Amino acid sequence: MSSNSRSRNFAFTIAGLGVALLIAVFLSPFASSDPDGLDRVAQDLKFEDKAVEDAPARQLPFAGIFDEYSLKGVPEAVATPIAGLFGTLAAFGLAWGIGKIAVRGSDSSSLENELPYSDDSDTQRH
Image (cartoon, rainbow, N blue to C red; front, side, top):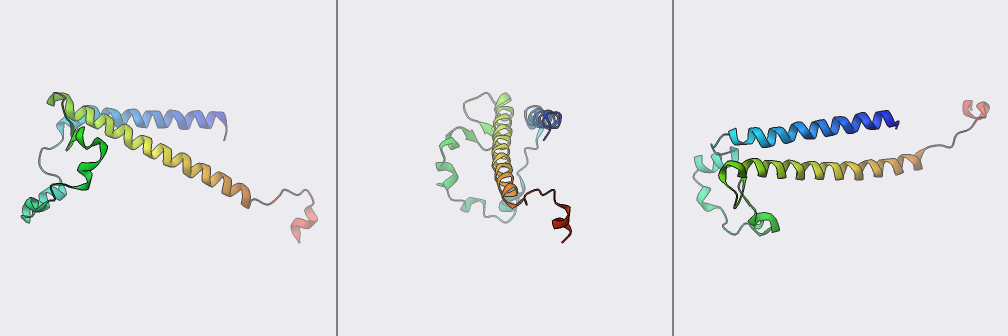
């Protein structure tokens, strides 16, 4: 890949991350306070009270930091934007890492499957 192509890809990635961060930080406070799809179905079908209180997700190391879609211990006005910032960076980091692993794996497998280059045109025709 050429240097120019890499720099364009990097600029596009950084611009996309910037837009995602702007949306996460500045638009997340305007998100609806109505329950999301699963919570709404649980309320409509009256099984929201049957939720397991000691859910496995509550045992994760970062469960004490976040409360639903906001950050604990931070003023309410900035709790949701900060949680959006962290969530966006975490999702980007995971996607970036998985992409790097996938590209590295595909590069090594494509090199193994390539045929050696030959200048002899007669052997290529037969």
